[in-house]
Length: 145
Image (cartoon, rainbow, N blue to C red; front, side, top):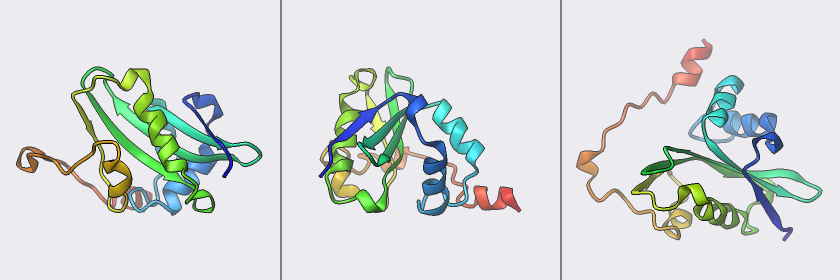
């Protein structure tokens, strides 16, 4: 297992790699345009995971007011690099970040990584009857047409 170096320097991010993964492999953002990914990155605290000699292999972004609330999004490790503990190292870096301490609420949505996120205190909403959302699952494919 190579050591994962995690950085929040947006200048190091491999935008084409991130876009390629999000638009073709991620179930939550299939077809997302590259300019939408770029705007999302610009408005977020981003974490890139890098392996010496391999480049960027992992990514996560956090949308936050840095005082009371944060939302974790677009977390991934490239398939060829899974099973090496990189997702845990990436999440350790997210939860250790100084701007993300003392938040009242930290949220995310996942369909397949509950075990990973439970390690960091995530649970099902205590009061799901209080949560509401607007969901447009086909927005990227509908926009392209």
